[in-house]
Length: 140
Image (cartoon, rainbow, N blue to C red):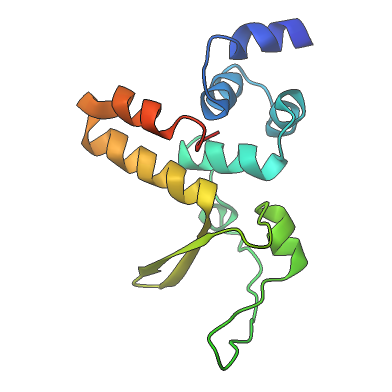
């Protein structure tokens, strides 16, 4: 597909997440979507994962690497640079933690906002447009 066709598919959508989903539905690869929208591959992957369009490596039998991180006496944990890069985390940024029966789930701010929006839209579909307006600029 050429750039004009990609623009025709993505153009009617307001958010990057909606553009990603529309392009994926049209058969555009994750890499090509990222390149076309000028965003990180990880962002595209996460949107498609949350939308159920792709499966996490652990869902296909492959496991993501396990990292052993030291906890300092003050409770600090230092994430490797590769993890910071993969999830576009900046110094001074926020990382959200959810306790699960299996352990701790770490989410970058964008993933936490997107998860909150997804859950709220599922549980309160009549308020979906209000939620979208409130979160404008925080999701994408």
